[in-house]
Image (cartoon, rainbow over the protein chains, first blue to last red):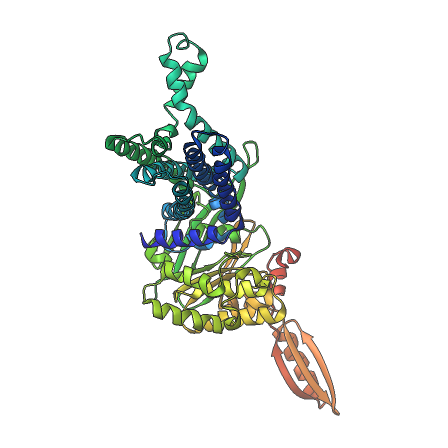
Length: 257
Length: 297
């Protein structure tokens, strides 16, 4: 565990000192600011639209961070050969991967905390409540980011960064469409259409990222049942374990030529 | 007899790049061992299999067959790794870290003593490799020579019993090469076994008690440097003087030398010096069947 935390802290330091992070933060802040402008277009729902876009800004920022920074995490170590000296130390390849995973996750949590503070101030300014539901919405984004980081890490050890971004982004998009496929199967007229049949089959092998979408809960003050939270947490943990196990399996047999 | 720090038996490795590519037999059954406290040079031309061997030693490249024992135990356990230091060829390090942070990071991964002991060790090593002034600068501002030196410090940070350096002098100026040579010497004097690959034959000859030589994935020599250089006699040099005129002459065999000495004495000449001509490592390479061009950097 000590080795994992040492690698995680170093990964955190690596990402924090990388300029790309600040580009992503600025982008996310712009999205949150845009939410005020977009909210202003509505006479009656300004606060709600702003909150909705604000949460979307945090979610997009966290997803970009997971995919774009995650795609180079292992690739950079291999390309620059820093991995050689690292794996020559008393750590296993799996511990190295875990360190990378937790390091990036730590960065995402830190960045999200900052963005959430900005959004909270904005919501207070717009006279919306910042209560438990606000944190539940953020928790959903955290769970989704955990899965995204593990997906990106998995592709990162078997492909180049560009391909990793393409694969991980595709899974991200499919993950958000999964519930639509399931919905299509429930409509009688569509149930026999190939898109619904194949879509629902694919859906079984892809995490349903919409399960973590509680972003409208604080906007419309809709309560989120505790069992939903528990189920989503277990669901996320299950997928993360699957992706990390696959990553570790692929990485264990890799030759660093 | 003490247990070797490293013992390799029949190591084989084949690469295949792409589905239709011909397999490359990088290592064809390499066996050798390294004794504690010795300096062993690992020589061979580019593509001879030196770096592949070193990568196999650390599990960075997985061998097809063969056994690797560290300190008498088979397999690269974490306990064994904690006793070994490693500097890869052309090292690139985390450029966002300062020299001190970099050593702290690697130190923490294998360090067993207290944090304050580690900090002391970092300062001591920075001083030893001549980077005390640059310890708080990011590695991105380091020159190639400085990176090589901080790399060596990284390999030594946890006081290893055995260090493996892959071409530690590559790309260094004469001063830098001298400095690395001195560090290797000092490290061995402190009881650490050193195994380093190099293309610099004069340095290897000067430093190494033992040599391991590969050619196209096959071991062609493993043993003492002295034995290798003694395997081929080069002859003798005789310096004589007559009426204060010095004459130097080389003789191929002891018999020829003896005849020459007798003749000089007969004519009233004086023998000033008789010396066995030792082969240099470069010459030995050429004479015992190595391609001299290949053996040069």
